Length: 289
Ligand SMILES: [Zn+2]
Image (cartoon, rainbow, N blue to C red; front, side):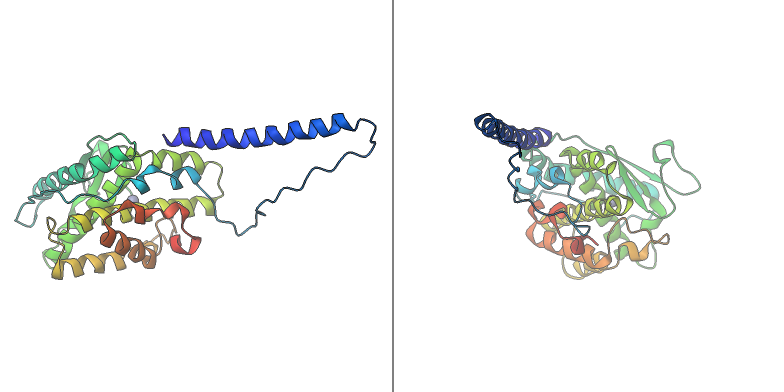
């Protein structure tokens, strides 16, 4: 759908240029004796400047933003807080099934194609084949319908409540990437990357990552009751959203976004429960710094 929309815009642009050319030809034909060519009319264009932010228009015009709120779905998560790898996996499967049910109608309304994703735990000394792309500076990542997570990062006997909230938030964020994939936003983003400078690529990457967290927050906001994100546990979630971002990356690479912007996008979407709050691709550079 998005590619088709893009082509339609392109077609209109081509038609407009073609129209100008035809008019020009007519004017040339009417005055064949003139030696000085008629200057082309100056088109009122937006002057490109070096500070212009890179635009990824197709990701910015996705139908996802008009697909409506994420639903609250019945979700019975394990009561016991996970304290081992197998328990984390059991918890994740239930949580992801709830995300499937909540997101599937939104993806459908956005014209995307929905499919379930897979999840794999790993630890740094024992990388399963499915998680071979794991990096030392991330606790989890998404790739083509698959979540990989470093399971030991989500068990903390000293702060068990925070560890579980972190786990829920990680699943919601990675599922946000799955929504981007299902609605073609990830592919559209990839298509833009090759023609961007490194700085522009980093900014686009931040737009994508902040959007994944924003979409995750829309789900968690809609399902705050099922996920127990009320009262103190909601405060723990807010704490997490305010304490993540590039400031915490040991490599200091600016590819995910500043903590202030994680807080900004997630707070909006938690309240609205709507991907309409998550169009990071039309936001100012400051909002995706
Ligand atoms: Zn991510």
